[in-house]
Length: 176
Picture 1 (cartoon, rainbow, N blue to C red):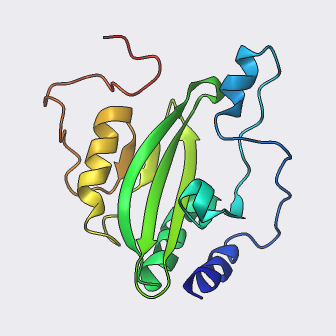
Picture 2: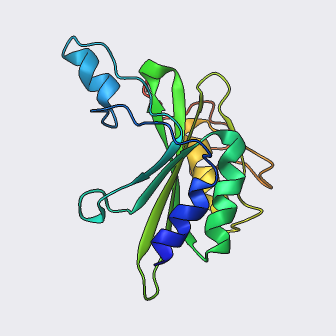
C-alpha cells in the first residue's frame, strides 16, 4: 500500500511519462563499448517499478538535480528514512550519479532509490541535510570519494580522507 502511494506521489514529478528505451541495463555503456557496440544512452528521467527479489528495491526514480529536493521531500512526508548516499562514475558519459537509498519498514516494506546525474566537470547537487539530518555523514563521504559537492551542506569537510587530500579515489580516472 505504501509503495503504491509513494509511486503515485513520485509520478507527479513526471507529468508526461517517457518510454524507457528497450534493453538498457545499468552499466551497459561500458559493457557495450568493450564488445565493440555503440554505448547505450543514459537512462531518461522517470520512475520505474522494480522487482524487489531481483533489485532489492521497489521503486527507482531518476530525477534531475532540480527535482531532487522535491523527490526527497515526498519520501520524507511518507515517513521513509535514508539508508545511504553514494556515487557512481559514468566516465564514458562524462557524468557522475548520486544514488540515494530510502526505506520504510513497518507493516508494508518499501524501498526506494532516487538517482540524479550531473556533469563530471561541475559535480554539484543540493544537499538534503535540511530534510534528513542523517544525510550529513553520507554526503561528506560521497564528497570525499567522488568529489561531488552538496550545495548548502553545513560542514562539507573531509570525513575519511586527510584534510589536505586533493583527490577522489573512487573516480575511474584516479591514479594512486
